Image (cartoon, rainbow, N blue to C red; front, side, top):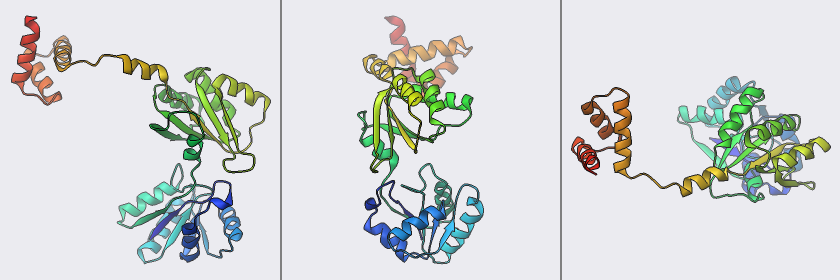
Length: 282
């Protein structure tokens, strides 16, 4: 079986008893960086074979792991920190296991995205995780254009050498007054949480050199939320009339327009006709 084992994101005390037991009892451990994982194992006195599984060898290594799991071996997959398979090459290994009807089990634990969300003052009842923004500026702009319309709280990751440019693009697209939370060193001694406007965060990084991996939590678009809340919903009569006028404008015959409206709205043509007739008499 393949076990997805979450490891600490900073404080080693956050590792679970189940995680330690799984790492001790498996046949071997697959990790993104075997040197990093070796330090973790040494901290807990665990001696276990390590194999590399990362972005550049995941096809070959993934097939080897699959073969071992199919032969009855237990393999633990870990990432450098946190949960494997979340914005991580491990996702491809999970897909491979499912494609070959192999069981995957999870041993949960610390996660940087959720931890950053928990300590940010934004809505936590509805949120989305978008991983790392693209490096190319044109794609980065499209990335934030999608987030600009998002009413949910958004969580992204960014590396220290890219965060200044990412914040600059975010300011262009989202506006300098959008509130964000910038979090780093979660669970460590120097854990840092900065909650401010994008404009002020941009000024902060002009004075402070970025260090460490960052989680950025972006408040949802309140303007769109307010617009949706305050907008009166259309009733079915209004929807049918609008669709009918649009179809006629686009060259549909009356019969074809009513047939399409009936299909699109899961109605009978008689119901559509009745609504259009009653609307026309008003």
